[in-house]
Image (cartoon, rainbow, N blue to C red; front, side, top):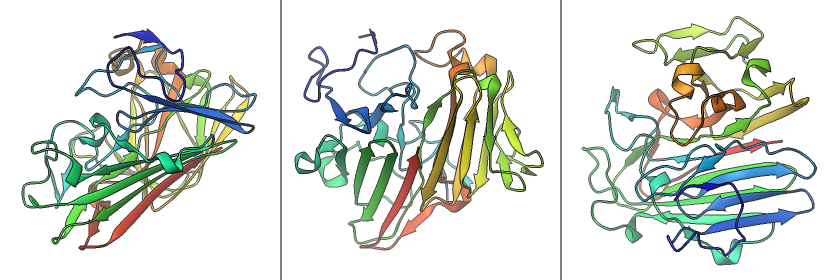
Length: 299
């Protein structure tokens, strides 16, 4: 099914395919989130254009990711990087964004929604993990609060009897009027891994802002509080986070952007992905009973 983005009511199921969209609406703003992947599709403060970007057309398909929005990357980021090596796991960015999350009905209001993904509720084969941790058990809770500020919080608890390791990221696609006129400020002097080059060489951010254009930008920075300056829409998006030792900054550029699933030619110029992350050499390690919280706020 392909549809224009015409947002459903909080209990609407899309054309019988079992995917529910939940709508948050209050005086401060509005948001739409899907049970499939606990995937945030839009958020806008009252009186503002959308801050979260999605392609003009998109569709739900079992086993496939939804384009744009805020995918929850868990339990690995990209192809996976755990225990000191690249693992090339599938699906890319982990399986959590391809699963139905359970809605916490008691926590569903006009400004807040909470989802749960528990390994005990997944069937055999739905929890692929790293090979040396086959007995991992977890409870993941994902809470989204949307008003004039958007706050997303992923809390993972090790519910098993053995240690577990994982990567996570809140892959936020931020809407800009034109990426060629956008500047990401707050990273000067920070080191980053450059994923556009073989071996992910470490580099130093020497310029006062990160700029975007035809060539891809794909970087993993150390922790920072940021501002995305959008000169076309005339606004500044402020990005903060907790429990996140890294910030991933990504725009695919022209060639990669025009190959994005569901997106039309040129739509890549409408977003910058700025992601709260714990990945690669900063994976999360939990002993039995321990929990870890990763959160991102956008205003």
